[in-house]
Image 1 (cartoon, rainbow, N blue to C red):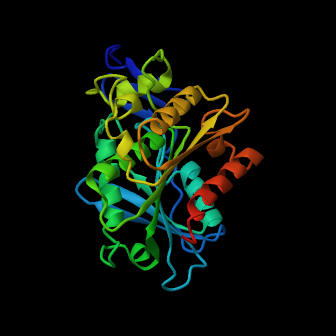
Image 2: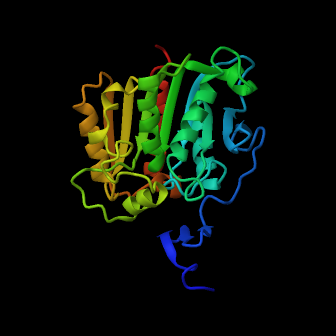
Length: 311
């Protein structure tokens, strides 16, 4: 093979490698858990097509014990993976969202936004916003998805995402604050160990290289989509509360703190809280979901959603 075409332009080992000739090797997020009705975990799932022309899709989850007409809080989930890997359908994310649905007793939609480099950023953000608008379009009993029409409580609406998905959550809440999200009361946004840029940081880590790879048109690390210090929308987040999780051994810990401080001082009128998990690394809860600290994080996510149930 020609050495030019076999040149590696980005890698995140052991999960991902991209070559100069356009070839991509993904070793994470490619296994698929099929949707099922009344699974052993007590969850029913289905896959839905949001935009036929682009292939934008999502997985919808409901508790199998749900009663006809019963309304539950709605969660829109955005997976991590640096914009270049991950999927709602892979075991890691399917199992995490299913566990959250079971714990919190909610309706969830996990978004399958398109991935770089085949679909470079901003496509991931654009798909994420289109999917959010699609979910919101069911608020008045319209829309194509019966589970959302029948069981979604659009006055109890939440966003959660991990890593770059946490960054997507910020951007969706910011866009909702600027443009609005008709028929929806966006109560909360949760950023789990989010990727953001910190202006004075040294940007040599794989997460920063991943951003430059996934978004070749970016201005760099002052890009307002990743740098809260540069985002004029920060004070206008379209939700009433934000929860941020950080992990003690995570390279992105300081950036999560940076986001918390910038939001707290931005003039935003909502409530922001930050929680640190001691002794753990980035997205530990996804790769060791049965450990005590992962279970504690899951329960905190469920509590974040359900503490407004009586309001």
